[in-house]
Length: 246
Image (cartoon, rainbow, N blue to C red; front, side, top):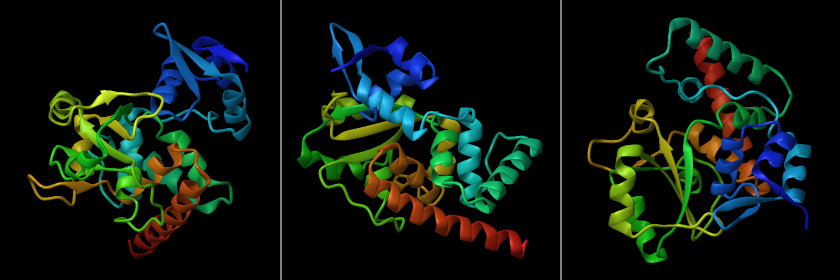
């Protein structure tokens, strides 16, 4: 088996070392921690490069959330009119071309949140998913937002940075980068109003469909990508309908 250092993998994939570590922590790039140092599965890294999933420059964190908000028909906060115009133009171009747009979406918004993987007792997952401090994402929100994808025994949530410690203590979360059954995405505070747009204060929430599409694509699973593609097409159809009406 070929093993690469984080630096070697970053050079191969043409991304930053920090992004390689993020992929490793999320479990979407194969690797192991040995003596506190990451070793990357070279075969997995080369397959990822061949798929082209690391190509293309991502948007900044706030513009990534701006694009997801625009795709959802919402006005992203903290963006200038010029930034909103560029995002709208990008979405129109993605909708008009026959390239695999969901793959491009995944590239554009990949730095939207920090990923942390944990192991939690399966009996606590339903309670955790109803906690008002989290927003259900990915596999945990897919069925509710109309994506035909289920992954029993796994959960994905968004949490604000200032709430992570509270969640870890309340549910006994243990970091497990290799086999954890809970993926926590730490979202910036600015994204929180958008993530909870349809939720009442003090109640649990599902991430908007556009966010769920991006989450499913991060899993690098064929079934998840198929479900994401179908949901993407519905979102694009809705976006074009709103544009025609406007």
